[in-house]
Image 1: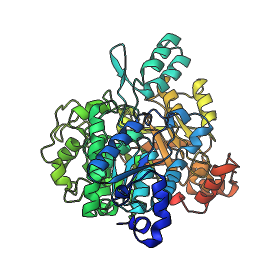
Image 2: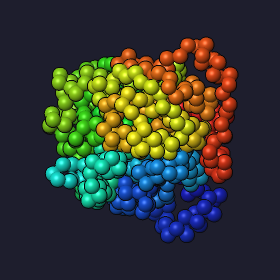
Image 3: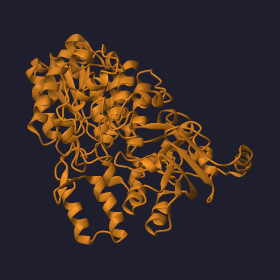
Image 4: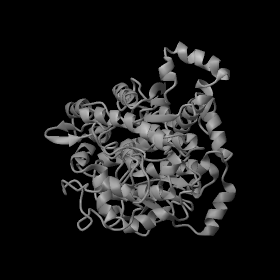
Length: 552
């Protein structure tokens, strides 16, 4: 066992002395040492219940003959960080989580890991760490929040974001806004729609790193505690069989994840995280394949913010396994792959049927014959950009409009809220990429403002930042190359005409190459707006190429 370097032999006596100082008995020291990576904290609603998950995992590990030892991982609440400087720190925590977990796992010679994440960057960060460390690992998330209810209608966090703009436009009064505020997030858990956290927890199931229900069993259900105990017991089986993350995280597993991503209508942030996780496995995930996969994969779910259904309903309708089994009828999946259950994908999904076709559609009658995400290319984004096409109104799938250009989120938000953005405009927000922001902020506030003012079917938004999983409308993000690297998005001027064609996967500013070259010669690099601390070092690492390939 890996832990024998600190538990066996005369030379390990000093290490054993420190293990005894932890209160560990000789019997515990001689069992496999299982690291329990706890993302518990008291500031993130999705993580406030993880102490209970940790306790249940510890019980499961102990029951199956291991010694559970807890250490922490950080997590940022994207919703609380939204709309201020804190959002610049959100995406970069993914690398901090991966780096620190790798350091803890290797420094303390654990035999296996149970990862307990729940939110947006915490899940992919721990998946990246699992791939790097490559000792037997299983995931069990904290689970999704239940939806809120106002006047008999289910609502979520994104409802409140849009309500702020509706209040500013005079569409609702202060009492109604207060009602949304108090009832949108009624329990602990990751926000209740198919936002980034729940997208990544569901995709963890698809990748084979989490047990059935990992992405969908609500945080407040006792079933979630039972799942945690099962994960604790299952890790001992993975140790015995020496099944490691890179045995599971194969190229086929990532293409399965991309396929089910399309079927579920996951967050566009999955297009950032899946390549980063694959990169840690030595696999270069070619996102040019995304449109090819989307063309073959129907959208089976319309979960919030796209529709009026929530993760709790997906769970009752059969969960992720039911979606996988339905898509498998098309022959698009690699079902012979090993998973953390010790069984193959095919064995896992056998008998998993759709229980409610109002929540999970069949392949014969899908919401859409194509997938929920599209990668667009053109002279604005030669290396690509991403849109959640399932969240775009039919009339906005093809759009030509006048550019309204802003060099930061705040300026754009001011313009939208003041009423100066008109029907037909294309809002361009740039210098918000990994390097230029720095930190690649989410643009939920501007898109919510557009939707709240009733412009969702007439105004598009393009950015080299990214979008929250809670975003809906013609929001096109992750534009690459970013403005700070001299990408063509930096060359767009107010009044330019932009043409978006989502069915054809194209995005263009209607300028000649000669005009773009003329503007490029005049372009001057801008300094990142954060000049001290970790973000300054992070921006430099992106500039040097250390992390930019993974992020962009």
